[in-house]
Length: 188
Image 1: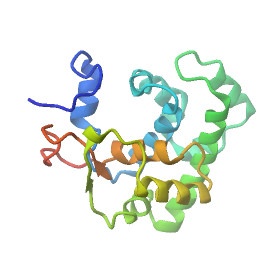
Image 2: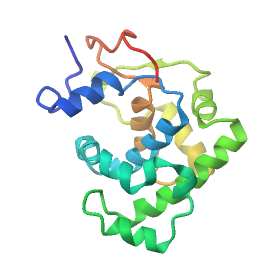
Image 3: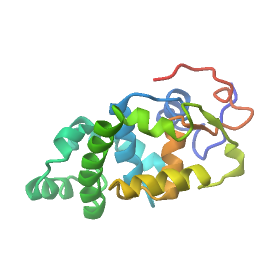
């Protein structure tokens, strides 16, 4: 089976599972879409493998990625997160995700779902790019990032948004020879 040539992909079962089952798979589930916003916003400046290895700790620390709970985090909760050695402890990113939960809920209320909002940028179509080009932004990520920022999202610049759009399958950037490139999977 031919896969993308990510660093460490061949030697890490967790990374292989993420590549094979999640990355680039079109997702319409709001719970998953919010989880990935939170994880991608913590990803900035770090390797994705670090975030992936801490994913379950993030899930536990951030109340199963429930934006209805996260939006109400207070100073005490922020302090407990900063003391949690199992997650990335960055005050600015923690505070940003409280705001992201609020913004996410506002978008849900306006569009009926976050999925409706994020997929509206491509008219519900998956865009096929070329991961081998190794780009980190494009016109779409610029546009989505600008709109998300206008709506109150934090730590979702164009680079992070590009990575997010790849992760949730709005952009399928699997390499041309990868088995995931040609739609050999289900949506989640």
